[in-house]
Length: 221
Image 1 (tube, rainbow, N blue to C red):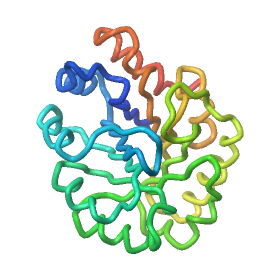
Image 2 (cartoon, one colour; image 1 turned 180 degrees about the vertical axis):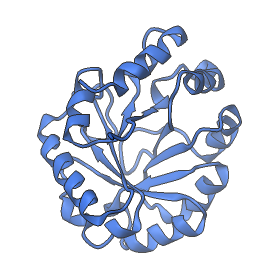
Image 3 (cartoon, rainbow, N blue to C red; image 1 turned 120 degrees about the horizontal axis):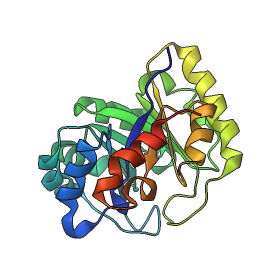
Image 4 (cartoon, rainbow, N blue to C red; image 1 turned 90 degrees about the vertical axis):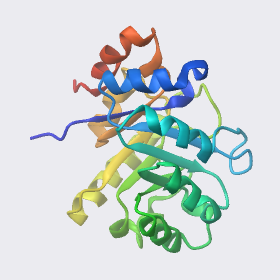
């Protein structure tokens, strides 16, 4: 039996003037995770939100917070993000000198661990850490820039990571983020993804459409 495809709406596409209401709406609409993109203006050019915002919006839903750290260094802020209510903390392995140590810190704080791969990152970075993580996030755009199109050349990477995960026998989620819409969601699912990050495609059309949007993203063709 196929695993259910999980949808993780990226709140960067939400209406920040009513962010709490938006998070409640995607919860009711059937979202599986709340995806929080944290950018520091250093590792990536944009600057977004930090632990205090996460702490405030944590009150709006009980579904897991999937927090993607596009920051460097990572380790000094991990405790703040964990205490703010993060459930999964994902980081980029090149952002710290010793990714294995970062993984252990995140685990010690009671959170699940994700590793994110940029389009240019080779999958061999997973060789020594795949047994220790809970989620692998494949970026299908260059992180830090909005409005990019899905990079089709990343589909082979998704397929290869799916094989690596299956070979471990572990329940490691394969998440895809970047340019996900109702068409590219199918490509990602067919390549082996089981979690899709979708911003604009989830939030388009207003709150009355969120449930339908999430259902369409999740469906298999």
